[in-house]
Amino acid sequence: MKLATWNVNSLTARYARVAQWIEANEPDVLLLQETKMTDAKFPFDAFAELGYESAHYGQGQWNGVAIVSRVGLVDVARGFGDDDPEARYMGATCAGVRVHSCYVPNGRALDDDHYLYKLRWLASLATLLAVRDAPTIVGGDFNVAPADLDCYDPAAFVGATHVSAPERDALAALEATGLVDITRRLHPEEVIYSWWDYRHGAFHRGWGLRIDLLYLDEALAQRASASYVDRTARKGEKPSDHAPVVVEIA
Image 1 (cartoon, rainbow, N blue to C red):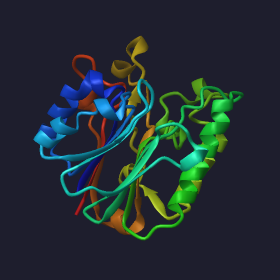
Image 2 (tube, helix red, strand yellow):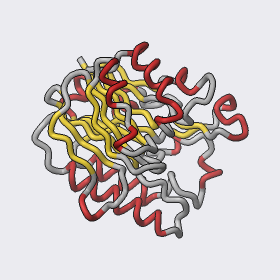
Image 3 (cartoon, helix red, strand yellow):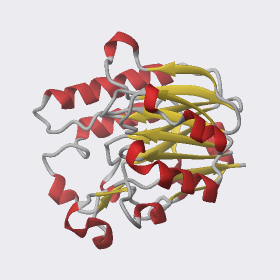
């Protein structure tokens, strides 16, 4: 299986780029975040023409997650119920693997209510993932850099979100359910980023963060042959500020 996760920062603005990437890379499953559209506007038919089923959980101009699959898509779940009114989580089963597309709240600032929402959201995800009855892959924009290696300048982020100890502890709680950050396992010392600010020439200067993550259960992680960020998707005209993260499993 070849699976990717990608925060596209508006599927309306970037569907053509997503379609081109799918045709060039042929993933079996693609997890999308920040689609920024309603379910009524989601391009189900266009994905079908490419040979993919799709499911979407939309919220108009904000948030939005999707799962696109050419290996089956059943048992779709959306959201965490009444505990979360925003369109940030979707799960489905594809070829016998339970996949989860996640768009974790940004947090904004350490003294903002949105930061507490972020921590609650991650705790809800850990609770959901603690009970599993199928091979599992969790991917998405987590808005947390797991370690200083995943941040271009840790000193610049002191006192800010994305690197705080409670956020990183929340990721550790996910891993404690038996999940593996597969990109980091396969590249333990490599500087890898998946997001670069549009401002200040950040992409060309290498000012990035690794906040788009893929977690696999241990059995799948043992079979993973590759995991990487496709930086080429961050180039060109009007790209997303995120690049796809890919895992290939034998």
